[in-house]
Image (cartoon, rainbow, N blue to C red; front, side, top):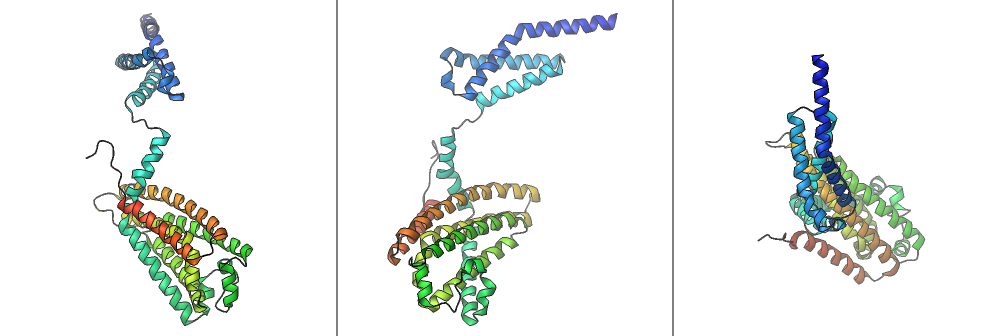
Length: 338
């Protein structure tokens, strides 16, 4: 009899508690649902003013429910409701437009500046690889087939005539050029992803991938330069190449940052060091995607409409200067900063 009476008393207490306060909980929940789905302007002025009052009422109910060990399901419901209220009232709320603006104006350039050592190391590795590839093919043309995949070579090799190579650059073989350009863009995208994704292995794969990509570039340049078309090839590649190669360098830098953080974590654990490096690297890689899209647009438009070497170099050089200024010279000061 005593146990039954105690149980009945608890049930009555819980029922009374719900009856007194549930209307406020439901009202608070309904208001939160409206502002989460739409916007604060969906509420009237009185409803907006009631939000913090209802939030404090829900917190008070949660405190009582925990102190008196009421129904666990009720406690879980109130905890979830109060958490939603806290994030809405006190959490940082930014619109999608604001988040995108912050990314392009602050987050992405800041990540690239943070990676400056790795970026310029990656650029240096590309140059070293290009010099090595050029020298190897110049010393023995058999190296060309070892360096350049048949799908990338597209029939071009050290024995190709100058007329055939020139026709590819200036539209005589437009269909052929279109396929080559598409493959080149796909190849550079794959190189970027691999240089980043494999960086966790102490950065060694990233370094090798960047070197190999430079080596391929040097090998292609050699066969054109040998026929007196090195300047012309440089112009054709520069339209989109300055953006693509810079993107690859950044991707390699992001992979190197993760790999070196794992190899030399300092006072942090390896997981903590990798997580910290990963935040910067991931931001940089989102930007790499944007750069590759720009490169694709430049390549598609430039290949079809621009045949002047000077114009090609001007566009390529202008894009390179634009990226350097954007990443290293341009600064956005946060509102309220001094």
